[in-house]
Image (spheres, rainbow, N blue to C red):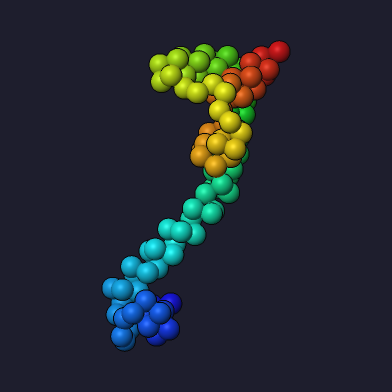
Length: 108
């Protein structure tokens, strides 16, 4: 893409200028990553769910992690009921209430 003349002439530059090419690539990648963000967030949430499951397996209970999450939510004034679309687009971790519910269910 850096060596493609059409890109430079489209944006009003004459000839291939690598520094301009890098700037244009940065702009395009930034715009593209906005649309890929929900997929990155979903993958991150899945990894967090797997990490919670591993914690339950290693500790034998989810009680301690649930207690820590409750304390952290209270200290940070976490939103306990975020809108699902907001979670889908912005949350890298499952909502606190969902995680606590899963951890406490493991104790039964």
